Image (cartoon, rainbow, N blue to C red; front, side, top):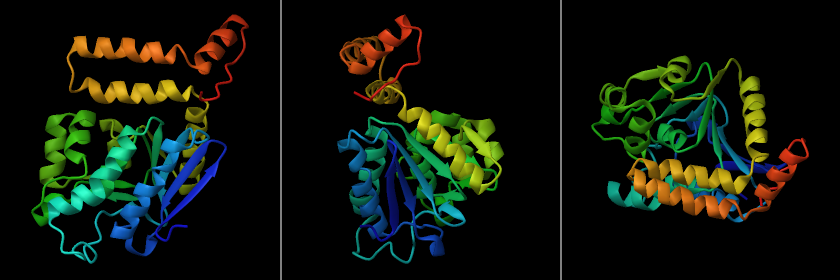
Length: 259
């Protein structure tokens, strides 16, 4: 159904693969629109409990395809508001975990896409780079929001102003990625293991945790305490909460259904 991405769902895990390997999975209009559509599915489909986002070929995503950028003569603002920003919001606001399996370079808006995800696992040959400054632009697609929150202002400023190329192992030390593996095969296996673990969690609670974490940066303590109470009330009404209590009392492993 898609021309620039692949989408496959199995055992509660939706895998979305950027599929323009000949141009290092650079974004064109079609890919951005297809990604927006693909990330609508897990929001509406209860059978999807975790999403894995990765790339085909040697790169995760090299950012905007410059040959395609001005096809409709949009301003930068219009292009971001219509193509990039809705995608980033779909990922960030999705009430389910999103894993980014970084199989190669993640540059510019490609890195922004990875940063919007909840968990990142990278092959050791991968590199992460904020390249906007090299063409006189500023970080976009959420990079200036996510990057300093993940690694702190000083290091984020340095990455963006110097266009530092960060290796996978350096990214692990900085907290940019959660895990580094040695090969592509290990990346696929590792991301599947992590996704399977996330998919077995109480999905509603995971979604509310995402929401709490995101809002904590822009709220005071009183606001977060109030939101925690509101979300805990909702979580306490789920079937997964009942299952968790039953499993604890019966001394067995919980079998959450995501409901």
